[in-house]
Image (tube, rainbow, N blue to C red; front, side, top):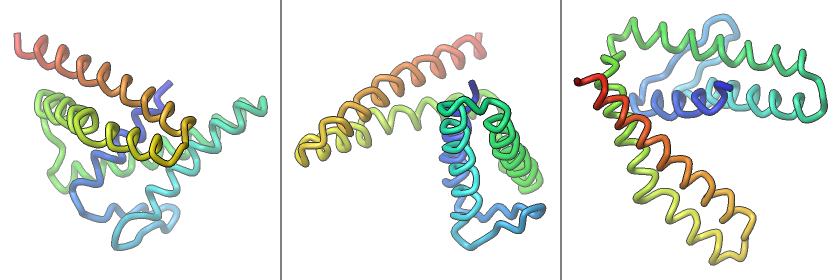
Length: 146
């Protein structure tokens, strides 16, 4: 399933601090929150529709969110900010590393301090997955450079 990649892609896009204007649905604002929220909401709705047994409806939401990602990628290509696969793998591994070193440990600690064990466990799960993602990106980069 491609859903986690959408979120990583949105995170990746946010670093450019440039608005992406989605023309077909009129979503645009200076901080580009509307487009991100549009995609995020559709992906949440995908999961809920699947949970409720509405697979066909989930697919509608998934297609709409996926189309927004494609549009954003085309806009980024036009702006000249799409890098090589090697550069993207290196940056992806570095991004995962940042989450492992600083982001998730802090989230886990704060959730535990607040007595929110369910949140802490969710962050621990994500923390472990980020380690796996970093390794996958590093291995792919090594293989690409052989």
